[in-house]
Image 1 (cartoon, rainbow, N blue to C red):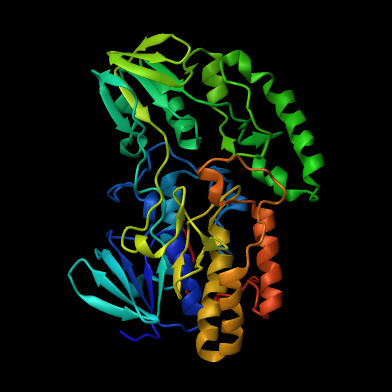
Image 2: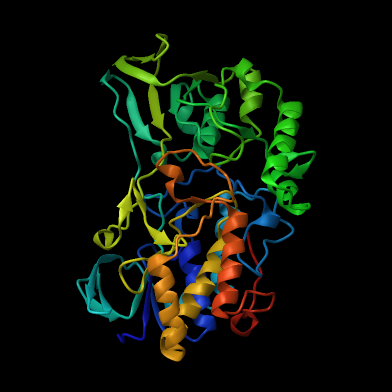
Length: 446
């Protein structure tokens, strides 16, 4: 392989987005995927995926998807995992991305060699590249907390969960109330003998529809209003629609609306209102077949399912990233500040759909790599930005002081800054039709 060639690792949404951007600019690349097909976590057959049968997008159809490749109108407001997988595979087919992908091939090591990178595959062959784009995702290393005591039942992480039928006849405790935890709690409410959710803090619960409109469409479709006005406006709407959620056992949030990752769910309140699921505080100890909580109460439980998130990692290149509380320090959440031409695409938390964001940042990555051969002075200017520029991308929101929110950005602030950066560097923006030259077809078959 040539140092002019780029290595793309992972054929999920982020890796496919990077491949399309490179292909548009005629940049040579090799693409590796350890699974047998594209789709990343959305493929339930992909070993280790955290996906489950009832999973749906938490961003709506019209606000999600790849740039200039909309989801079909036939899709519901919030597509299910099979539809997302079909859509992602249609995207790969439409832009001829499959041909460059070497399936069933894992990368085991990335090693710096001067300004180049040596990439070792699982067949022990070593290939030399000028740049490496790590796009293998953040949901492959489950995080399972430890609690004192011994438990006589079954303990699992939510990454192993697939079907609601697993809950039949069982007393289930879900630990954690992120979006996956809330979804799985609803599955348990409808199928388990008893369904409990243990949480440490309160969250703002946002329904997927407000006044019949997907919540993110409502938030993004109208005129942009300042945060000081937007927050009380939406808080008032939520109070009007939902009432006081503390009467169902949910703790009052200890933070303002928008200061944590949005919890979008319309079913959980229904099950809480009907007593099919109950809220419990944090676990204090495990006592045989019972779980004791911090308020002194106990419950008999058969299964504890930890919906407690994931540790971010890039195992084949971990040593080349600077980690702070489990999050890599990357310029614009993509560019390695210390090591030239090593990128981490997809290592970001954002309060919006990530697909279109991947396209916009992949566009910048590709133009930067293109400049390294065709406009070296502009590439050198961007090198200086990678090393020194630290823009505020929180949009004025004081996000929770947690490890999860350390890499969190506000979508509006992020896109605004990318626009400013493109103008400064005189790089082209994504506009409709930008990828037409490499597109063959685009019918999505769900």
